[in-house]
Amino acid sequence: QIIVAVARPNTILETQPNIQELFSYERTECLGQPLSYFVGVNSDPMLLESAIQATADHQITRLQVVMYDRKGIEKRILVRCAPCFEGRIYRGCRMNLKMSSAISLDEIYDHAEAPHILVSAEDPRVIRHVNDKFVEKFMLSRDQAIGKTLGILRGDFWQILLDDAMDGQVIGEKNRENAPLDHGADQLICTPVSDALNGRIRHILIEFLAVAPPAPNP
Image 1 (spheres, rainbow, N blue to C red):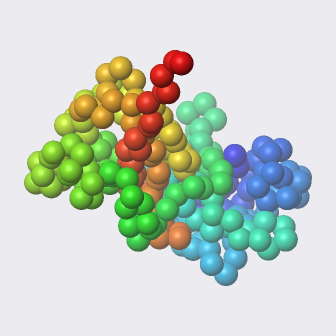
Image 2: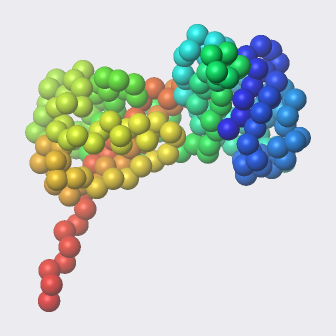
């Protein structure tokens, strides 16, 4: 986590010691440096700057961006930009940083083996795409699913599960007793989807992976 000034050059005001785990810089090396310290040839500094400036209007933005460590190694980083306050005084942008497991929109077609749906990342979590295997499994037509919210898939755990996925990690979760529809012991794999290599997290891919039943006792 780092805090940066909203005005250019987005000076780093504060950082946690674990910054070294991501970028191999000591905390003291980063303080007072511009955010461009971590920017390189494949980064999109304008995208990052717009998210930082939006925090002055109390907006929160989640992005996947390319950043670089001390050795110049390219890393995909999930960034959550949120306003930072001291009391009631706006101080700047609080940036939570972690390695990203997000995929691009083009990469969702690499996940065709399992039934899946693509939903919008923000509430009300509308279904944007379903594949043929989802249609076959749940006996729902595309017209019955696309444009609808996740309310058509029963379950009281979607909110927590998808909020976790928004943090840039692939989350696997076995269904609870209150399972969506009738897919029983499926495992849900939720993967955040970004617009591009540098882009906003606008969708989440949900895959329904069948779990083999336990072997009967001898």
